[in-house]
Length: 373
Image (cartoon, rainbow, N blue to C red; front, side):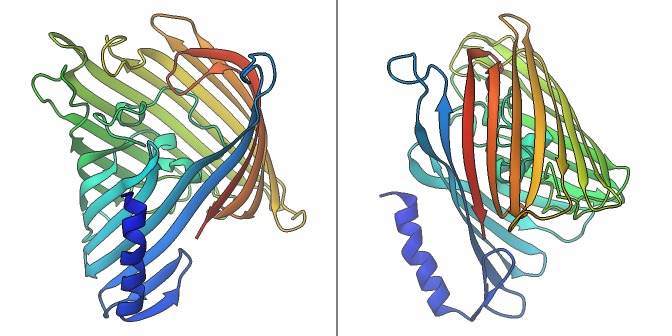
């Protein structure tokens, strides 16, 4: 039976059995006692895509509706300093565990999470799909725990392990150790080590834990943050008897400026370099360099219910072996309620994809819808 089917009656029983229920900004809050509570929310991303030469005849535009993400968010607190997160997602056709974290959070400076969680990485990984600036942020190679549908290296950027994180003034850090890739080529059962260090030169970004966003729609004031992330796992990738060490480093920058009239300029950029002699094996990874840059302008005045935010994005992937690839995206966000409710329309042209390798060179139109509560 799918996990979602099991969760539904459990959630209903909780809501009927304990305490009082109040409506919060993120879903519903179930108050159990003065120090104990549970929050419940949900998120959906769905889209329509038309892709050049992608129909069954290989000549016409495809016409595809997709449910990109469908999540249930559950979090709460048992007592002061001790919290938990339990989120679900449709993974490989069935609803499964996305996050399952026990959280010890005694202070802003020092916190410890254990369980299944986001491995610290670059901004687009820490955004998740719901807090990006563009609809297609994953067109550069991804770290191993988000590198594809191979559950021996995590999924959706998640993995089992421990993360220590905190904020010291304008400096933010998150470092951790995780299972990483545990296929047959990882004969020594080595761990994946990951970290993210960031400094906010202007206003501080306000996100849960070590998560990020790629735009705040001007509500956080002027932002200029530089982040450095890394991941490494020794002799784990490739083939049995000839395993390779993976090392990845990424430098990302976010700048958001609120103009006098209330309009907002957002610039996001990243440079990433991966080193891994593992083009073959159960989990082949990108080896080489990549980068992207995005510029957006959000108009101050509403059009109907929402704000209009057009953007341009360019991606380039340059593998050590194989052909380079690139992708251009022009799009517009219609922002009704920040990241909670928006509509996106975009056109992409090029041959870059999330693997970093060259894909089909074509034009794609996407109309996307995002909802969270």
